[in-house]
Image (cartoon, rainbow, N blue to C red; front, side, top):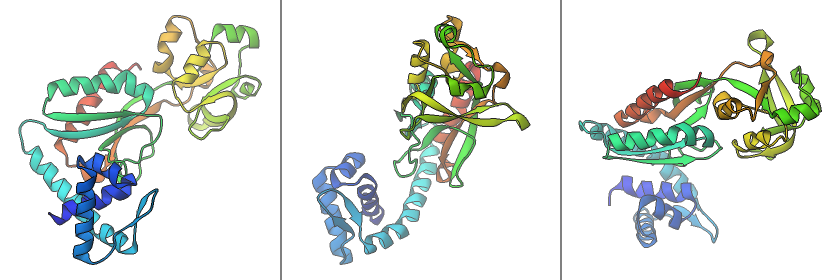
Length: 299
């Protein structure tokens, strides 16, 4: 067996936490993964993986082995990607992560169209309201709100979107309309966060007038879609991207408030590891996604 394949098995075991999870990711049986690990350890004469009933972790020898092999694995993957890209027909596999609202509304339909155009391409789309570990979880691309991009990643701007504060007419009739961001302290706010907190930081104003106001929540959730549902039900106010609430605004279920304090638009980026920058398939996907969104995304 090739050394790089053995190293890939070690990496998968550590990344996914068990032989069975690594086997599923690699498309192998558990017995094959265990045999190849045991064979490598016999050949090297050291234990690479410390086995417990709950999780597998690297020994010191395993850490040294993997730290030296991972750059080689990345280089092999990059070469193989460039060779595959020489084909005139796009082919290969892309794993993509996106937040639920933009993923469901825009990314998923585009993925379907892309798959139909390029039948030799396999695509996996994960929709979750969290920042995935792009490298650790094996993703090729993540759609994220910007602007920060870590140094080990490349980012391409996709679209920007207005941010607005909305509430139902019924809620405002009962509780009054806030005239300044500071008035939100007297209102029921509906927030999205992944940390289990009953607060969120909402941005208001532009340029030198820009500021962040921390609002306390009556209802909080780790689902970015629920605050819109709650606002339409008259439970309070929420700050969302315009396209997330546009249908509700058009049919009158929601109205905007604090329009004079609207913040700078929020931006979305396509983020991928620098090592994938030479992938023709990835470049094709991001380029066509950018065109798709620019043609359809509401201003």
